[in-house]
Length: 109
Length: 120
Image (tube, rainbow over all chains, first blue to last red; front, top):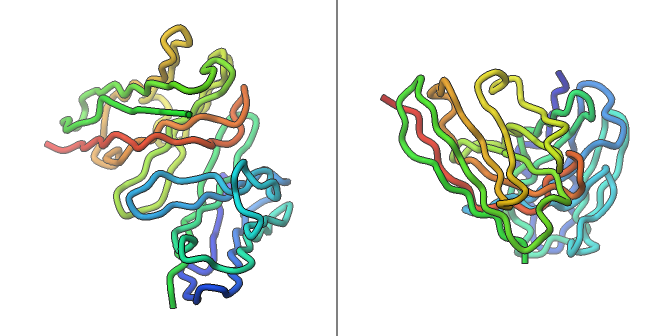
């Protein structure tokens, strides 16, 4: 089974700063990786899929990169609404399965 | 506007069964795969199961394989999760989510969830 490790667990930053979140897979997942944002009391929102494609309506300050085992979500300049928990998700085609990472909380410093 | 409304959650004893439903609207239901994802309150996300547009491809997390059954009724724009032999560790908020595509790729739109509590 593939394990996703997200780091850091918590990221303390100020609005306007750059956020860099990491997701590392225990084995290669090619580019089968997505990123989600979840705010308290809300359902998750898809930000990035296939490692680097922004989902519909996602601001350009969010970008994803990586392939194989190492992936990064970058928020170029944090807005107040970006403070939330971020999860990465990997999937396999066959057998169909998916697994989330443990999450990174981006909090206001 | 995409809407997904889960129902069927509640308090159930260990070993019993429960059936969750998800009513979909605002999109062509049979054009998309669907997912169930769960979350213990205050904890992380766990993918549970997915089903392709025509029910031809189905996947389950190891933690629920053999106990949960995902299904869909395209005529009723509805997704289901039959949960059998429930355990305390199945206690969570269960989300229904629409996929980006016909086969299982990425959940994009999510409902607000239905809470399942397994306890005696």
